[in-house]
Length: 223
Image (cartoon, rainbow, N blue to C red):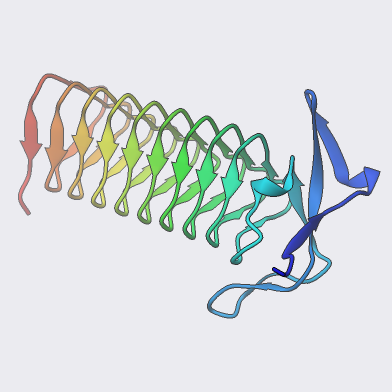
């Protein structure tokens, strides 16, 4: 019989209500240690809130900590950690060593995976953040957008529609990338700039200021 990693508290002081949902704290039933020997939680430690046991896998060292919430059919699996005041809801998934913290909101069918990190930001709809990407500082990733491969989106930037940001690219300071735009290969879009349609910006290019780049252009700077 599989050993339990956590149980759900039955103490009325360990529950909260959000709308019609009753959420309860989890309690570590055994020590939870990652592959490098770091202690994630000790037996008896209280974690965050879940709606049911399916919200957190009983396998691996994934954990919900602090006052974080995971509810509906959302799942935290494969050594991932959700902490602080983060919320993961609907059908969202946090997996494969990903970390979600701060006041982040992960909703709908969004996926955070493959060592990605999301802090104080929103990821929703069918958006995906993966492969060591970082999203933080009030950024928003939505629709079918993808952020991956060490890319950073931060400081109020928005990536949405079917846009992609990848390969060490950065989008920040309230810039917006949308439509089918692709930002990659160390390119930067910042300070209120907007890039949309099928534009491709790559190769150390930098688009800044109140600029709109649209159409089907390709902008590249070779270093």
